[in-house]
Image (tube, rainbow, N blue to C red; front, side):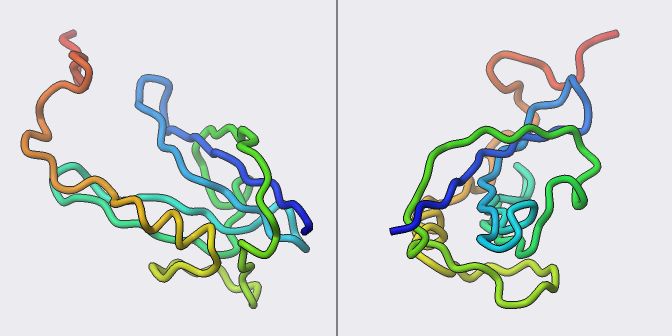
Amino acid sequence: MTPRTIYLISSRNAEFQRAHFAIFVPAATEPVQGTLIEAVGAPMTGYILEFKRNYSPTNDTQEDYSLTQLGEVDAENIVDATTSIKSTDYEPRGNIEVAASQVAPPGISENFLAPVNDECLFPAQ
């Protein structure tokens, strides 16, 4: 089996913000773009798992980001996009996306204004 490397991508708009994490799976033929697997939403509405096809970290984000190699999976577990068109969908393709969809994204927060980890999101001036 041919191994394919997968990455954790973390990004944020500003240094004081919490980071957003997602899984990046580079395409076999174009390693600078691939599929981004992420949960998107907000604490007051809940989150949903989405798959961004033909995503390129360097071209598709204005945020500071970093990539961390997570490991390798067999290529048979990954289904690359069949076109070069950028798209977003909610249907898993391939075993790695099916596995990601088995983890429920966070639901609606009971008290989304409460501090997280005893930290205030808007510190007093």
